[in-house]
Amino acid sequence: MSIHAALHHVTHYRYDRPVQLGPQVVRLRPAPHCRSRIISYSLKIEPAQHFINWQQDPFANWQARLVFPDKTTEFKVTVDLVAEMAVYNPFDFFLEPGAEQFPFDYDPLLKEELAPYLARAPQGDLFNHYVAGIDRSPQRTIDFLVGLNQRLQHDIGYLIRLEPGVQTPEQTLHKASGSCRDSGWLLVQLLRHCGLAARFVSGYLIQLKADQKSLDGPSGTEVDFTDLHAWAEVYLPGAGWVGLDPTSGLLAGEGHIPLACTPQPSGAAPIEGLVDDARVEFRHDMAVTRIHESPRVTLPYSDAQWADILQLGDAVDLQLQADDVRLTMGASPPSSASTTATGRSGTPPRWAPPSACSRSTCCTA
Image 1 (cartoon, rainbow, N blue to C red):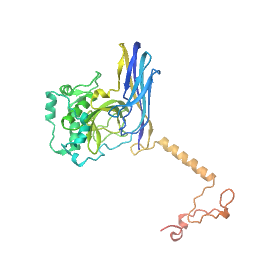
Image 2: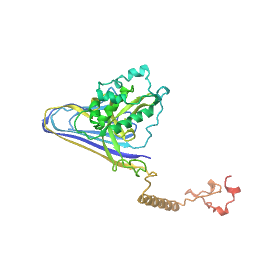
Image 3: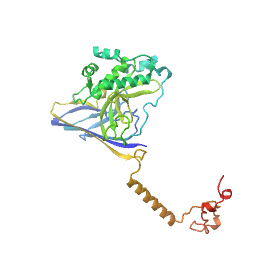
Image 4: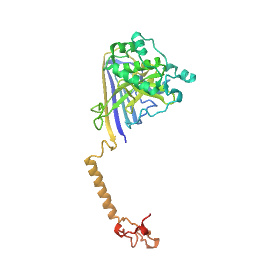
């Protein structure tokens, strides 16, 4: 049971005069570790005169490096992808025995490999006070992570912030609010100060309207919706990278499509590059469309679909009758000698109704 959702994303820059674009790096392709299946993907760049080179950064994220030989008055990036929105359980993973209880230590070699994701940025008094208030007594690791994620969702108000860049954890705690990227970066630093490797994630979030309203708690979005989003991932031995979304207080699900996962937010910018000085007009459009839906308990076939199914069944029955296809029961198959050139038996056996059937002679025990 799944839904195929088509995501359309346009980023458009218009300049008031011809400008020379420096090399541009576009990080808008789903990461290799994306758990939701990506059925199709396309990236269209304007102006058409450009060179593109697909690369993977040191953290295995896809990035397109663009070079423009001529000056231009616009720069447009269009992404189209189709994702299979099949529900999966974000808690469906196993932990190594040594990591089942928090706190735990990484093996020395693994800790060395995770060094970039354990780096702690200098923080202020508010951050240190917040860390001191985190319960780090022995407990199940998953309980610790869920509790910290939900606490952050409760303590930090979500807002749409149009200013560029990411707030420092100190700023986010002082304001008690921030965008998804601010909360995500705060969670990364909190996890690192608790001894857990964590990374910043930039990606797409697809939210689809639920078939039925929830009987317990919020039902979610009232319309199908998509946007650029940010969250965090923590590394757990045995499970690998596990996504945590402090904006919602939930673990990352099928609607979270990672694009770039890096130790620092600066390495996950969707589009990065240099351009000549100019006045710019910026436009950003995103949309999601359902292009396929499997019938399910909460959204079965509609009356119109049932009518089409019944009409097809009637057509099949008429074709079977026209071809003289019959159901037989309890008779021996016709011999080749009694078969005509058309392939039909000269005297085809007829089906006996249940009242004429003897269990001991024509039905299996």
